[in-house]
Amino acid sequence: MVYSHYCAPLERRTNYRWLMALARRAIESDDINPTVNDVLVGVVAVDKAFKGSQKDEALDMASEAGKRVGPLFKPEARRVFKMYGVDRRVAAAFEETAYRASAGRLRYSREDDHALFLYSKDVEHTKYATEFAEFLHCELGFGFRNIVTARELTGDEDPIEGVRAFTRSAQEILKRAGMFGNVVVYYSGMTGIDPLNQEIGGFVFANHLIPYKVWAAPLVGHDGNIVFVNDTSFAASANITFRDLGLLPERAMVLSACGIDEAGVRNLFSRSVMRQYGDQLVYRPTQIQLEHRVATVEAAPWGGQSFKVSLPKELRTVLHRQTPKKTGADFDYLLMKYPMNGL
Image: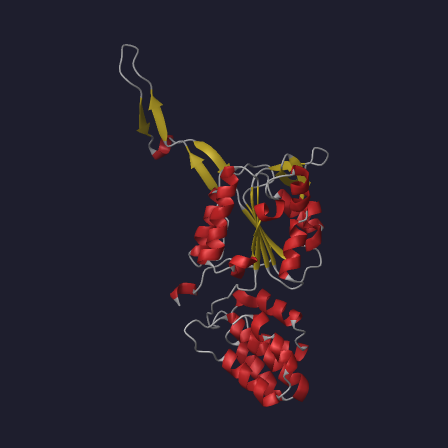
């Protein structure tokens, strides 16, 4: 059950008993795959019933709904209540019992959520973006029609038009998602730092630097939850922009592949993100490190061939190190695989 399919018809119904019956079915759902979306649709129905009746029974039902919703889904509940203008008394009754560790563990349906994939035009970064897109679609259930790619927006012909389309991509995905839509953005590619201000970074597309500040401006004022997965070098420079725009710490979650002065290598960061969320875990940044694990023994002057040997752990040296960062709101529920803990 997702909101767009079930909440819109509620606007045309005023019968108290019908609304409460729908709410009860949604909130107490014992389907094989109950979702938090079901429960929140039930609260929207309760709200409609309460506005027409002012009965305590409706508030009691909202409180029952809260018992099923754990802390992971707090941002989603607040988004939905704002989207449908839920009465503060109904929201308070829900939150009175919600967000407790003992609450029921539910799935989350992403049929209404949108994803934007941005990447440099080379084969390597296109491959990394495709891998993450497959994770969102195949493993997490993002609707195929709700996934927008850089190639779809920028095309392959006029580079200048491509840069303009890339620059407007945040605006485009918000237009498709709607004012309250949840959006996940992923980037794999080259980045640069403005030479006049070392703290201002941006995407590099078709040899043009597109500042994060320019690209992210349309996100300001958006009422949905925003996740930005930035798998590139100097990735944490985006955090400065998001904070300056007021998107951090509460309006967005930014996952950065590395610090502002570090390089990212391949898609090691993306894979660590997919692995943790795929294991039904909240993402915790862990340092990524590559080591010299083999050494080459050169051939002797009098003949023979060179060969490689594995180095014991105490003789290995660091080849590469990057420090991922997680900043902002707890919107992990948008990227986690369900059911949780095998339930």
